[in-house]
Image (cartoon, helix red, strand yellow):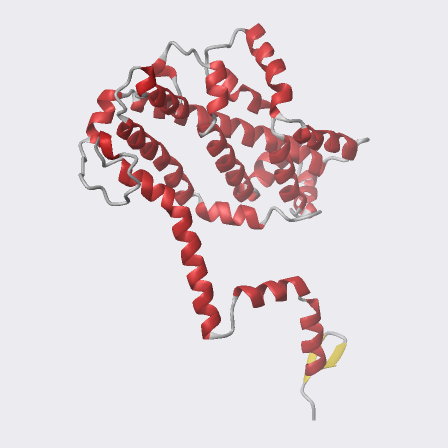
Length: 317
């Protein structure tokens, strides 16, 4: 007698049940799983070699930078991954040559404020688009997304004139002030996450007397930590590496107020022989390496939320 799989009100033979379950698995998922997991030993060896090759390819610039930071002036650009002459004193002398601590502190403060501002403001706007039903909601959301189509060069001059009229040129405010109004890309990401939350949670909270702000702050935000963290990480990295905004809005005469990217660009000019320097680029390499460390540490601590946030952004309501 054939074995049966019993469910409430349904009796189905086991082979048919297996076939039905297999049919529910998307073909694309089965295809990806078969590609990602080679069945033969030779296939796994080939996949391992390919992964190692690309890993080394991506690690090469970092290894080159690390080696160059330990070299003397005349050997910085010899492309050797093992320095002929180790000069660890570069890591001590760089603090005397450049105001690196001030640059890194400025970048950390600006990036933290910018990332927090855009993560909170984008979450509020995204929750409004996800929860509330109002006329022309989809049209307005489409207009928000349409702002991503504008190149940054188109809005650069108008934004500069706005900050000039408000008197904030030469301060940090232009580097994070625009983030108070959200970002179209982050609004889209957060909205997709909010649409995946069970509506029953919000309905039950409303019956218990929760305000709209309470729905956002007490229910939506605690459940959206992964997406909030991924927005924070993206914006922190973008602000940390933002050379253009710092170059435009910060006072060129106050070197101590520079951010790390602008400071490194200044150091490249300072040590350039064409600008009267002596070609001490080893200090630039040390500064570049030290500036990279905070981002590595940030992503190491936020990796779990980063992966979880990426995996949940495809939810749809």
